Image (cartoon, rainbow, N blue to C red; front, side, top):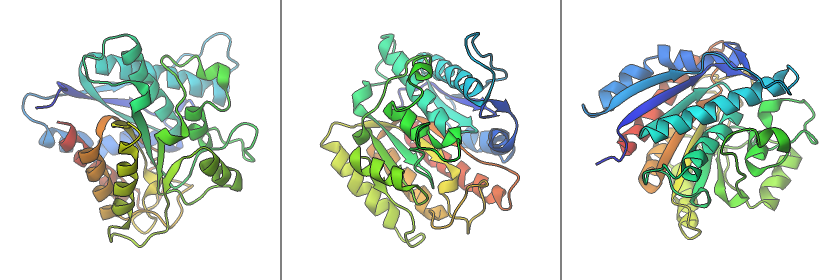
Length: 312
């Protein structure tokens, strides 16, 4: 029997702090594609389904208006929303625009542990890993990025590199170690990011494998087995939908070939649900302005449902 009493969908429709532009339109697109109906069909009768939208954000007075200030305001709101859900014994499913928002999802779980109100639902931070599905490593920093794109730095934020003062404004934020990050589907990254993966002991199941033949799930099974020996027993599951191969559809403007097929993704998340206690799931980076986005939404919803079936 599940220890959770309900599921809360936390909707954060922002791209770098601006509402309903580009990937900020992704959360509503997933809802419009039938996510709620599919979840309701999956849940036991005693399970409630809640939807909480972060309808507005307010930066703090010390921040200068801009992408960075607005984005960190969103991160603070997400952390608080995750904390609130878990304290109410509701499993958090976060839909947002940006990948870096997973930093706030993890922080929200930490808040519950720090507050002593976990009710056995959330374990300590050092036993939790972040399993990161993405075409990109997102390990740039303010000192290495050539584009200045803030959402290419989420992995580094988890590791505590860059924006140290602002990161400390996120309730519950603490760094993770490289061993606590498992990347799946990475195939588009810089030389700096490649070195960072190696030097920080970040484990990866790389992209560019044959589609839908079990290669990805076999490699994930091996990685999770290795993690067992280091005491990692639960996880935050992060799904950037551009991990899916472009032959299925185009998730956003940064999508590249060499990704996971539909069955690859389903097999992987089902395996993770069996081997790990998934404490929260984060789905990001869907831009419904690109050809085939409906297929990407369908596959993402299918993946979400497979995870929820393991949670409840």
